[in-house]
Length: 151
Image (tube, rainbow, N blue to C red; front, side, top):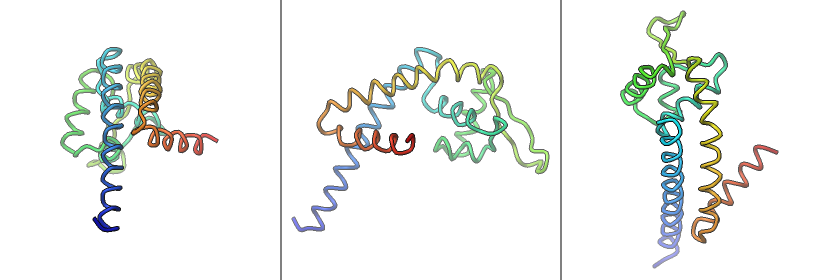
């Protein structure tokens, strides 16, 4: 195996480690959010993204980017959340083709209720992952990034 092959293997191992950590985090968040509010991780991501917007709304294509979903999957997701009364869609005043999505009062309330559950589950799974030697460096890197942005 040459130097180039070694570099490829190091990157591949890094990717596998990151994917393993992502899987652990997503499963833990899915369990916690589902138990508390019957929300999926991606549904929570929508509520979180909308809660961070000035005026509490986003265009559908922005929401698709925030959730890493296709436009059609985003539309189905928004339909489900709208059916639950958690968000609503409104037409853009300047561009009749544009549609905004925003949280309803019920959606804001649910987000505020479930955010501490999300945050606690995330802290717990990262602490658990930190105890696994193969995952600890990635968790440490995430913590360093959080300290850098928070400080």
